[in-house]
Length: 283
Image (cartoon, rainbow, N blue to C red):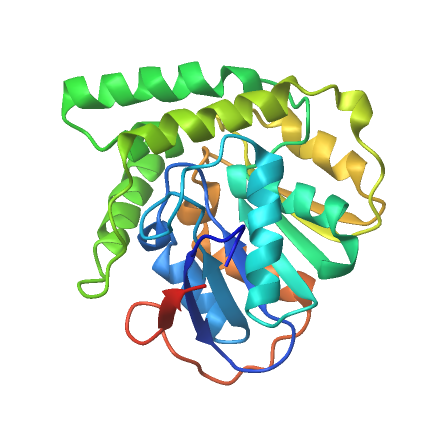
């Protein structure tokens, strides 16, 4: 439960140890978690994919601030019985992860921040315009908006986009509810508020962080990666070449490798695949 409302989640992978909580990008339900990344992580870790309030099968009204989403996330983690987790935050999910680590530092051990930015980050207040223009262009060309927003227009980017969209269709049962149009506007407003906050409010964080970014990210400009790295006293940074906002999807094998090496708790035994047998429910 989060503020009296149920949040949908999926839990799968290796039991025991510190779980890895996955927080997805804006406009995403549980089915938007890339199966290759989830499967790769779940082979070594217990993975919990948390939904956001008012999104997909999660109850309540969609949140319009990063701070509210972080409070919901903290409540959900505790409702699942955990007092220490690692967090993998993708784009907006990375902003929620940062707020969570700052507001409840004892709850978060390590952070993986992918395609994300800090408070007051470069270009974050312009994400709404970039997203809406990309969506309109995709509609006019009959493409999935994720193709234009997440990937470059190079041959490698187009191939990666097609592969990613195919992976998202692999799950055929127990799919999450569709994301309503109002979710995008509410979450874009949350990112805009985060980007409009003074960068001076940032305090140096002692939470170890791995920061991954694409060198051609139009939604969260690459300058945010270095700004994030400077925010942490212990940070590792990798920027993927010829990669946009979907850098983790395009470079999924490398993303899994870097994440597991950073978390350094892998044991190597096989575990349940995300696409076939997760625990699923709401809290």
